[in-house]
Length: 467
Image 1 (tube, helix red, strand yellow):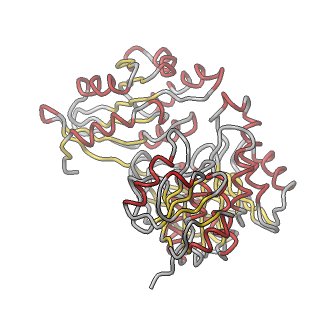
Image 2 (cartoon, helix red, strand yellow; image 1 turned 135 degrees about the horizontal axis):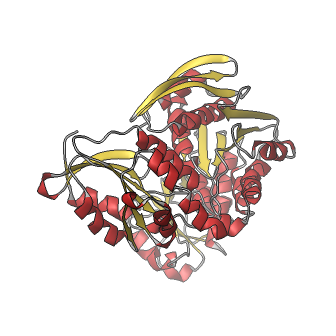
């Protein structure tokens, strides 16, 4: 019989809350009645909507109890706290204290979700594992992930995101990782932080929460590696591992033969040459793999097991998965879905992978590029700078989406400009008219640009064709 995640008494003690009635036990923690499972503890967070408005619905759906600040919100088992978010944070910290899990924290301007998913796969092979769901990497996502961690967990990985100074500092102090990793520093959130140096410093806050003698993992190839190294030296880290292509890195890529759907290569892991295979498109994935191996090594996982797990990873929706879609008039297009998010570094990585993807028949390469947000005063120049790598990738036609993408369209030669669209909805119509049988279509942009709607349209309305 599986032990409960939380008993009423343990949850009350951890959250410093008051029970209206005891005797219940929760098998999970939920913040959304749409996905709540019977037996969950429902946490009535207040964000765009007040979770207290859904507390009774949660109990009616089978929640074991509800974590609320207003006990009058519903009738039934309630765990009452002064502030719901603070109560969730304390619940998460209680889960951390009771478990012997080795905890890994991951942040970075690009690649943090991919590396988090890679480490989750590695840790699942190593025993009972726990990891951040989706991109639950903010002020409520991190404590929620902690609160969901079973006591018997052996390894856990937590993604941490930010767009302002000080946010990572708060998150890492909740998690108290044994291993803290930065994937890469890139121009994301420039609008809020003001400079690349400030971005590096904000990401380096992750080292502030390291457990005593913890392991810091940094990208050796990064322009800001020396700055990150200084931050590590000023933290409580006992060890540092670096990764990348740079000679002397603790985990170094020696060679990588890239194909459209992955590649094979060799890496040096602390002086030991090891062969590896990936099923993820893009040369950047080899560097991500090296980072995952370094973090796994810091967490005490055998690198052979880590590379075996990494060889089984496949692209996911919004992050490089490809599918064929049947359009009207018998047209079949090859869609590459990179629609989850974007900044200049991740754009270039996606273009690099697209370069190796070949259209069929008389098909072309089309890129639907949504605007990149939070780039500050350099936004226009950073968008325009995408023109050259797009052409190098062999892209024939570009559809720009959103105000920021105007600069890209202006920088492209006329023969590569298909159309500029104000919204993703109009881009759907433009692509439908433009697409030719055999085309390869890359869709990439910031989440707020809405280009994921175009991908959803192709998935929902187009008839999948056989590969």
